Image (cartoon, rainbow, N blue to C red; front, top):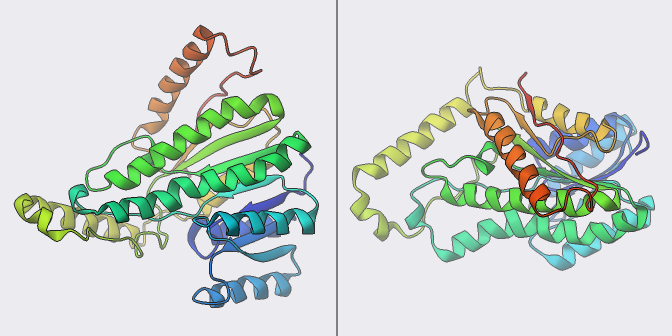
Length: 303
C-alpha cells in the first residue's frame, strides 16, 4: 500500500469511529466518514465533521451510509470509488450494544442487533471486495471486542454478534490472502464511548419475573460497567484509534489477524492458542500452501 490510503469508516458519528476518521485524515489519508441520516437526526454530527475537515483543510468527506440498508451501502461505496478512484481500507466500526437478561430480548430486538453488528459488515465487505479484487490489494478492519472471544453474562446477544463477526473476518482472512487482500480484527476492552448510552434493555419483561434476584444482579452489573466507563481512570479511546492507524501503516503480510487492546482479561493468550489450532486445521486440510497463508503472531496492545 502507498502511504496515502482511501479509507471508508462506518459508524463515524462518535466514539471510535469519530476519532478514527479525524486521526487518519490528519495523517494524510483520503477519508470517507460515513454515518446514517446525515440530513436528519445526525445532521449536526455531519456538519461538525465537515467543518473540521474544512477548518484543517483535510481530505475528509462525510457520506450517508446505513449498514442495515443494502442500497445505502452500494451507493456509498460507489461514491467513494467515483470520487477517489479506488478503495484501499474499510473500517467496519458501526455497532450497537445490548445489556440485560438474554431471555427478555424479543426476536425483533435480536434481529435488529445482528443487522448492525453482523449483517452490516457482511454488506459492506461484499460491496467493496469486487473493487479490492480488481486492485489485488485491500484491507478490511473489523472492530470487534473482547466480547468476540469471551462470553459475559447479560451480554449474550452482543457477544454472539461479535463471535459471528470474528468468524466472518477470520474466514475472509484465509480466503482473501491469495488475492492480496487482508481481513483483520481489533478487539478492544471496555473504553468510554457512547455505545453503552444507546443500548437497549429487554422488551419482554414478563419473561424476567421468574429471574427474581438475578434481575438485580444484571442491573448492578451494568451500573458497575457504566461507572467504570465514566471514571476519570477510564482508558483513553485514542489508544484504540492509534492501533487502527498503526495497522493501516503496516506492510501487507505483517499484520496480525487479531489485536487486543486494553485489559483483555486473558483473551490474547486464548487467541494465541487458537491460532496454533487453526494452523493445525489448515495443515490437516492441506490448505496452508494453496492459500499462500500462515497465521501471523497475535498481538496484545496495552497502553
